[in-house]
Length: 271
Image (cartoon, rainbow, N blue to C red):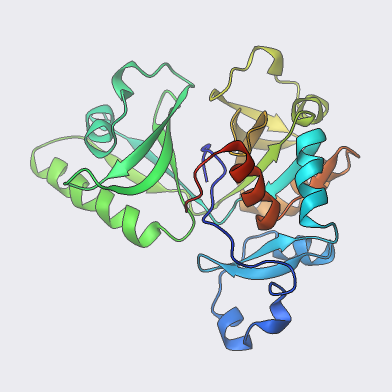
């Protein structure tokens, strides 16, 4: 996942076991698809079930080559199976500090902080990054976690309302998410946007136009590399992904290399 750091559970769908031809048609039919499904297929992706979604595990390139390309240049990941959620209202800081062990009160505008969503006993429900976007607090739910995270939030929002508190939650179901990761990611972004990336810090976010598309972009990722995560209207998915991929330094990357990149960097695999 998240701005979020780009997330994921360990992928046990390896080449030779991963292609959709080996998966029963009924099982595949029940899976959700991101707005980039056709884009993935056209690029030769092997699609596999992952957390209730049909996602690319790898493309024509091997997982090793995809891994190395991300380390040397830039990899583009579809992370639209994750869900952005925004919290508004004058008591949103108090609410978020009850949900997560995060110092939301002192979190500077435009900055994010890695945290976890906990239950009443302090156990971890999900990991997340909480970002102060000025007029809201923004986080991203890991793939397949809506049925746990959203009811948990709603339960506590109801309690806050009962105490006369002002807090509101909006699940951004109309958005898509892309992660561009690697040492060349910033050079790719500079060619697509007029934003000043040289002054953009790690874990900082900003609204900007990328290849003509309005996005909320954070300088973050979960591969051990510099990179960016872009949130935007899902209708713009294929056009924006195609523009990013016009750069010869960019390669589309699937779940297999995503997990190997995380493991190599010593980062947790979850969601």
